Length: 487
RNA sequence: GGCGACGUCGCCAAGUGGCAAGGCACGGGUCUGCAAAACCCUUACCGUGGGUUCAAUUCCCACCGUCGCCUCCA
Image 1 (tube, helix red, strand yellow):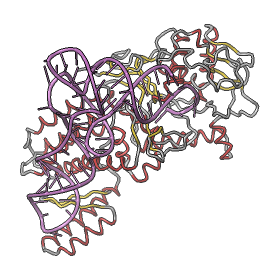
Image 2 (image 1 turned 90 degrees about the horizontal axis):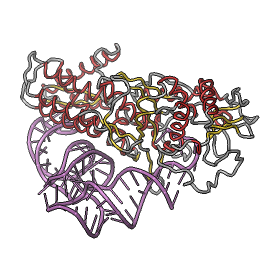
Image 3 (image 1 turned 180 degrees about the vertical axis):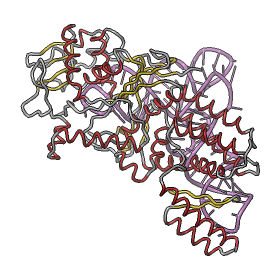
Image 4 (image 1 turned 30 degrees about the vertical axis):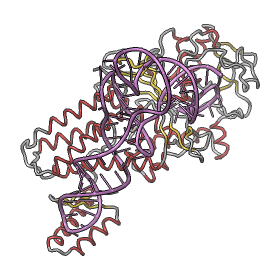
């Protein structure tokens, strides 16, 4: 079975065949950096993180581009988001952009999201955007209004609406379109806007001083780094219209070839309102929960597992309780990993317990089968849970498990759980000196406690365990020794 | 109103034309000095009503309900 991807363009799963064998070019619409990222962003970027990780696991050479939007974007009031924020903070727009771009990467790093290969900024690609607009004007797909704004004429492009399955004219009388309308048609969208005097973010252009429309940046930057046609375009489903639709129209009108071959759109993250009804988490609704907040009480792996617990195309309802459940689940898996590593410290040579290799092989098959089916992460995670039960059973039995098998188990977790899903961290064995010192100190206490227990001095033994617990170190006694973990 | 997604065990969530993975929670049990962890066992006929079929949770239709987009938002 080959990898299947649900292609939003055709609304069905299709075998994935990249443009160039062995290589994948991929573009994902990034955030507008004017505030801290929230869990909704985590859902989208984590989803594509898994896509990139899995494609690489499958041997593809992936070139991953994700933009940062730092221009444009008007509020209802006609005010630019970034400008508004800058005024509130009494800072320059570029300070705001820089602050929140850093914050975004901080959050993504914390969540273990692999950085894109290229993170182009819209503000750094104004010439490319202008050039693309000129092409559209040359080809007569765009026009300059009497107020000097440049618009894309959607009626000149018959395929407009094909991605989001919309027909022109369907939207009847757009009640909001009446204000300052210098377009030919209400559905036309802006490529370049002339800046009002108070608009600080402004660039020179053939049409006067202004700023680019929201959609043009993605067309220009994907073209620059990935070419006229590339393999995968990702983003949040909530941007299918108008943003994604406009991207396709602009790019294909300008270049005359297919824009993105596979469109993958991630489902929306919802959050219950006061009455318990789930609604979209968004900045404008003010019902958002930042990633930084989420990470205060939960491990990044818990956030990952929470989001991986449903398919990337499905909507998902956020709650702290859901995060709790995910973290419990993670502790289960990571407990098994810890046990394997512990056993490995003094495992006998040889391949005792070799039949278990079969379980590993089956796990891998199930995992790959699930992920090959349009990145079915919940199925892949389920394979890991099943493996985990088998691992516990094996390691709690009297069966002597040799080093070779333990290493194979460890490697399976490392690759499937670590490399692909990002929920298992690398061993800390080669960690910094203070990590090793901590490990040594705790083991020293465990030894002292073991002596106390052997002497039936349980009060003393319990005292040590209790105090360690208060320090966030949990001890678990097993027949073959004591293992420890930090919360 | 138009377009789209969805409705599976208490909660979350995969999945298949032939009697439904997994996680969390709950109950019972085993192990343990105690604790913790783990393991074992028990729990669903898949929104409602029709239709197609030898057979549907899985296909079709209708209805009910929920969400997203149609306006800046991942």
